[in-house]
Image 1 (cartoon, rainbow, N blue to C red):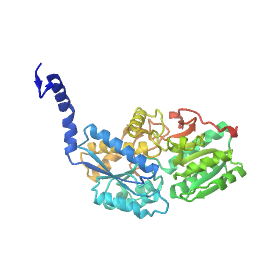
Image 2: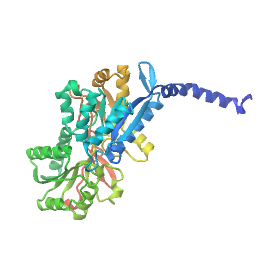
Image 3: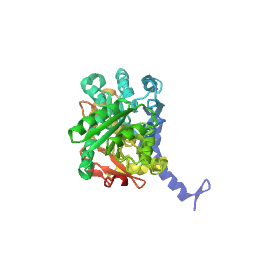
Length: 426
């Protein structure tokens, strides 16, 4: 047998085949100028770190497959992340704006992705994005409907702004639909509302109070809590005193785990329903609360953030994320952030360019089946088109903690189980 450099010839031949099959494509993409994705994220909080992990996973997958074809040239994505701190108490909006500007001017970002996370910061950043004609795709945090309403009202100025995740009005529609199912199945009709003192939560709580009242629910009280609150006992006592049967919670702060521990210890006879409840979304919540959060419902906004069969891509993403980071997709912002590089790749390859105006036109024509359903943007306001059916649009997810697992219970098209009441409510 002939040998080369001490190695058997069959090994040399196999190595050459691998080199010529795979390396040239990956090599060309890596040598080309990267397409820079700038991500302003609150990296110390769930909606920041899960977004960064999901973005990195998608970038790694796309680069490993050869990169992005820009008018015949393969180019890799490169992700730059700057901590905005915009979910921390008392941090001014200007901190997030500085992060966005640094990504644009110093890191030379071609696109802004992910955040800013806090609604107030995302709204303030829109003028900066307009000034620099920088395409942005929000994928985590900011839920305020004012974001896409500003695009519709001043299209020429804000046309570079897109959002690929949900927003408050549609979330409320899903929540009301789910609440009506609970009302019908368990004969419940009294609700106590607990919200965080931030724009999206105040707005969400107000809308739910109004719509639930119109649907036959009696709202027995409402409490607003500053970011960072660590004692909810007075509100829970008020819920018990007013005979509430559902606790409607809308808070993105991690201290909500304390709220649920207090709810369990006090055995408040009201089903906790987290419209947004960051602590309960995470896989580690069960262990952290020693199971005291069982029966809590949590809305994670988009499918794929809890296990389901929404599309053929859902569990493929779920398993890839779990393998890459050693933890299941962690909550709101994970699956939607993962889809951003794929949506940009699709639009860039159709546009054949990174030119902002050509990219606006291409993104408006996006139509692909993603992790959480069919992904299309409303061309008038650049908000992703939602649906209760993943074949028609972006589908949401509400799950319930049951025996240590996150069981998807809504919407019906992707449900993996039924809602249960805690034993002290039966």
